[in-house]
Image 1 (cartoon, rainbow, N blue to C red):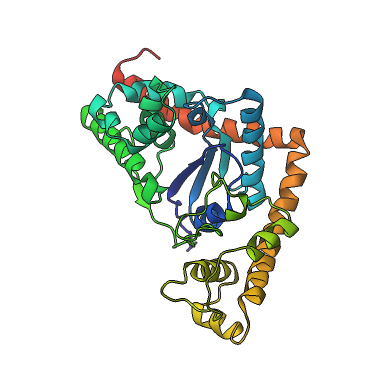
Image 2: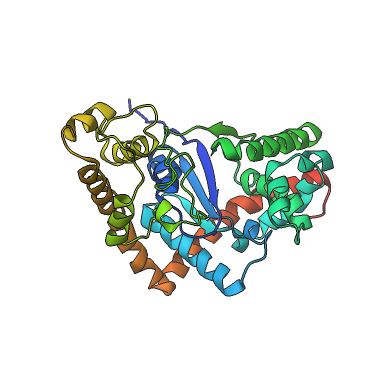
Length: 336
């Protein structure tokens, strides 16, 4: 008798990132590094969410370059276009089409309560546009088009997934099981990386002090210099402790990259000062980022090959998205 081996279908995961500049070391250790590992476990779809970027005014040439840059960086990080679907959102028109349909199943009050709308309205008072208000419907379309089982979320993104789930459930109640209702996926705890200059605040590329954050694409000398200037405290012992925010932050970064425990790190630097420790952390980070920067430089210099990747990715994404969009359109009553 012949034995057959059943193929286990992988669960689907979707993640998107806006082209708003080069991510920081905090973005890498907190989320992006996990994306690479997820490809082994899940059927992954990754998108550059460029349609969302224009809810605030953009300089066209700069936006175009940032889209190229973040796409190349995703490849450089290790996202594999042969194993995952990797595309640019605006090249798949189904996102905008489904967004309109879903906006008609989204309540005004729901959108009014969205934290991001309130925050951006305050910081961009001269441009409180409809897109800024209605972006959750587009975000729901981004997710639901690909029928993912899971969407990785942090604490600041939980509200976005909740409204997407509410919209999907509402639509499904009216028309049957059109959309998979995704669950939040909480990845392995990534390092919570704080500012190198103000370790009580999260590391951010919008920090007015460039010494407060490390960009994934910073060169080796810049990375090491920033860590040498990192804020510590008046003590000298390398260990986790109360009131040692700067040192705790550096230990967390070193641990995330080396895999060493806090206790192992404390033993490694026993009897050594903060200077030696900061240099070691800087060199370790620089070594970890170097291959990413090298690969990125190769990709961004070859626009033709980069275009091959994102065009193929868009075709793969559109095949899935079109199927979902047609199903939703048919349920609503449109003529196909």
